[in-house]
Image (cartoon, rainbow, N blue to C red; front, side, top):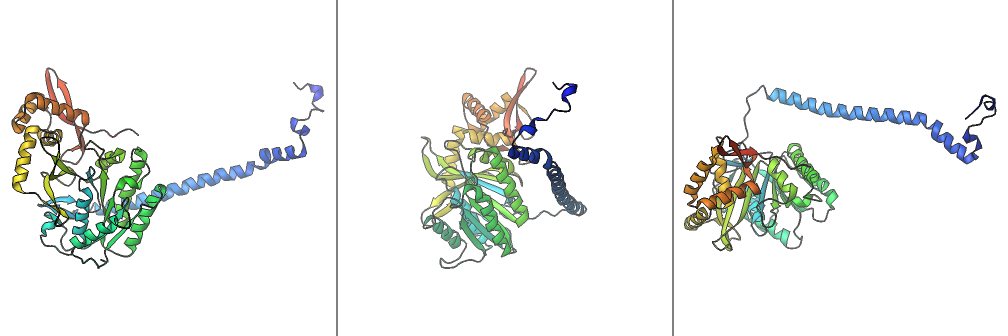
Length: 418
């Protein structure tokens, strides 16, 4: 404590410091005050500038939307359709998923060849899929896992040949590369850099195939990375006049696409398809391949498409009617959970139904026992397979009680927490 008589002789502690210590303290406590103030002002100015830049972008979009909203909206025709049903729309993100060996890459390459071909006729090799008439496209193929000496060149050859080009030709509007050698942290930049380069050389709409998309990020189980991936792809659609088809693996032993990236793809993609080998009564793979429409935002989902692999053409072809009929009859009696889930989407489309009525209808349609149907319904509730309503929104099977009566209904599928 400082007394009155000590006031004149009291010296603050820093008077006992060395010259070096005193200089350091003075610099820290006194001369730094003005720079810190300047830094604070600069930070505020930077934040203001950033906010102004964002606001300008949003206001610009508002102006464009305001003008567009005063005119009749004419929706663009689908880029790819089948049997008059739009499958892939312009400027959208689309997904094909499947297990190892399910021909998912081969099917994706078939669509890439369809978009590259100049032939608008009904070529049977395209399985009755058709591209938009009287329009040409630039196909941009980005691979992530194949080797550059045999596997990727062979895939590129297959696309060229199916599109009607000779082996020695180099189509101007077919661009392809690999990001396999790029570090994971740089793969977004690599993808955009390549697409930016392609866009500078053409005014055609870009049809971009990424095989496989989970290799574009470091951890496909990280929700934040997965959301960044689809935000990134969505911006590429808008900024480069592009449509994306993404190939993704399924988790082993399940029908869900891999990791949180698979979950996010179900939420963000306009179309989600699943391809895989069908099994016989003993659980063994058959030569029948099933292509299911898990999600179709553009309209009502078509019935599954059954295919077979042809060694002669090294491609997919439509399966024979007898093989399909026999297999469908087998599946009906087996009442697989994915078939039951597909039926529930249409059965409950208009609202809840009593449990007893749902079970009774499914028993009659599948020719299955009561216990089998109840087991499948429980499996659908527990496993939550990908189900979408007629608006393309992800849903799940729910159950509730109203008084003494119990009901089934379709409920919105909540996103996984971050």
